[in-house]
Amino acid sequence: MRRNLMTKKTLRASNHISPAKILAEESRYLMKTYRRPPVVFTRGRGVRLYDASGREYLDFIGGIAVNALGYAHPRMVHVIRREAARATHVSNLFHNPYQAPLAHKLARWSGLDRVFFSNSGSEAVEGALKLARAYAQASARGSLTPPKTRILALENSFHGRTMGALSVTHTAKYREPFEPLIPGVDFVRANDVADLDLKFDEAVCAIIIEPIQGEGGVCPVSEEFWERARRLTEDHHAALIADEIQSGLGRTGRKFAYRKFASLPDMVTVAKPLAGGLPLGAFIASEKFASTFSPGMHGSTFGGGPLVCATALEFLTIVEENDLFANVRARGVELRAGLENLARQFGFIREIRGEGLMIGVDLAVDGSPFVQEALRLGLLINCTHERILRLLPPFIIRKKEVAEFLVKFEKVLARGAKSAKSVAIATTESHPGTQPLALAATR
Image 1 (tube, rainbow, N blue to C red):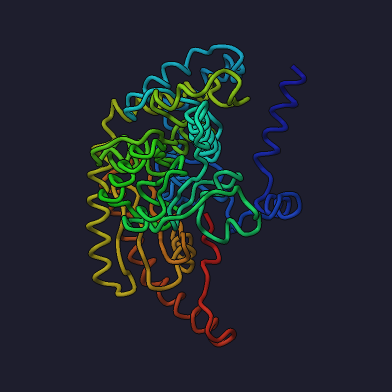
Image 2 (cartoon, rainbow, N blue to C red):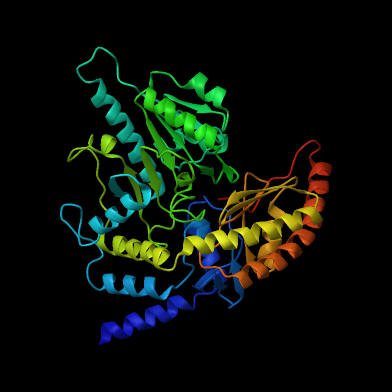
């Protein structure tokens, strides 16, 4: 009884730590890897978040494509509570009730055959690259030909921050502090078939492609480019890896963004929305490649535990049962139509890109003032590549919430344009020849 009273007292105390104290402790004890506004979010419901003062925000970034069912979805809460009271972790030395049914559903959604569960998207990419290299090694065994080792990725790509994933990430600011990275990686200009043909040779064991580049500015890959990559990988016995960590599992209105193409990849990586905000990633592979792995070649301590797998299985079931694919497509059409209207009103909007509820608003000016203005107006959006406003709202948004967003976003554009102009003038006066950066718009 005494322990329970102390626990409740401790919880009450922790819930009443002031935002100022939280920010001070973050500044003192956390590594300085994020640039955050001075807001502390304490709870969410549906498509809205609430800060420590109780102020409400309409969330159109969804934890960067993670919170596909919004916040506190009752069915997700029920499963998490149920499994937390049973067994959160068992280890991969033993079976648990949820890995196999979740793997079955992911295989069916993807059109592929076998699944490996990880903790994150970066780890899923690492595993896919390892599998491609292992397949190349196994294929070369007993022959006079050296194993294929080269990996191709696309310019403007982002695949994660671990060493292997970072090695196939193109953007210099992510790579340079950690070089030298893994050798044998070359980058192809996105949607440039001639460049792809030039760089693809007999030494290539894999090419990794985001069907829609997320961090790279919400840039879709063309069907011609995808199908050429598919043909080259088949001709050269290499792997086509789709990175759908951001675009997959319903974000575009399809189970996977590559489902709009005629051909499947050999592997696909997933994470972000998979377990509704809990850490879970996976890579899924065809039998041809998956059969290369044998016990002991790859593993994970936490990947695929019962709590996260049960939650992920519930997420996929909810998406199917409620046909959220249709909702994503319908709301995406409404959102794009509204944004196109705003683009005609605001000349600094260069282009609207994306599919479903993965949309980028390409600006001719710095994006950070718009992110900051949106926050002031109770709207959460994100900026990538300094000038691309990225929208990744939950799959459950309704027509009225799209309309609410468009009203707020019009105000953001009007006010943000003035701020952007002021920042540009101040920056140019103090540092002639420079361009302002998206100071509060990191990933």
